[in-house]
Amino acid sequence: MKESLLLAALLAAAGPASAVDTVEPAPARRATPARQVDRLATARSAIALKDWDGAMRELTVAVREQPQNADVHNLLGYTYRKRASPDMAKAYEHYGMALKINPQHKGAHEYIGEAYLIDRKPQQAEQHLAELERICGGRDCEEYQDLAKSIAEYKSKLQ
Image (cartoon, rainbow, N blue to C red; front, side, top):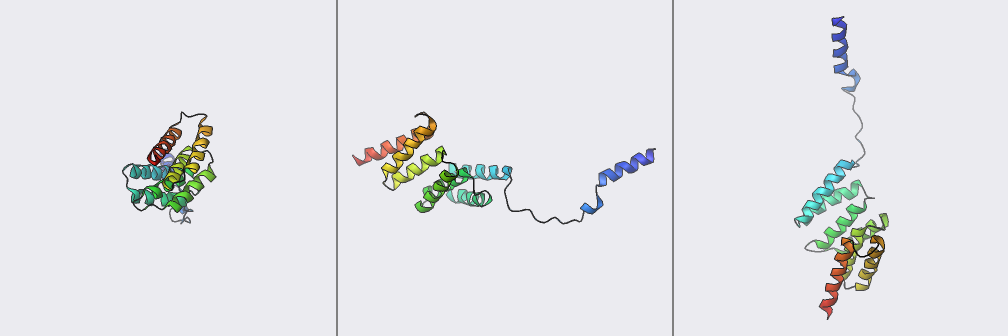
């Protein structure tokens, strides 16, 4: 009896013999949600440190792994806009993708509005401010307040 229990335990611990040398095909290059979260967290940390190159590295991989992630596109647009040599065309491209994926993405509306102010297009910025007011159900959300402040500062510099 002891021998059969011992044999059963050894066989269970060993697992299937054929699995040891079976080579599985490599999985498709898609990020698991945990990896994606890690990339976004790393990118956000780099952005907080104004490490635009580090953020760009993480976000470039993230957008390949999950091209339908509005947050990734929004942060990539932000990074293109904030670099020492801004690429506004790329910034608009990624903000546009974020808004195509999620038309109610508050961060993308705020950031594209700020980009329009850089390009001296306050009317387009105000359109995104109005959209934020609609999405937020008023003027109390942070994104609305930040863009409203940026527009007010822009206008005060014109006078």
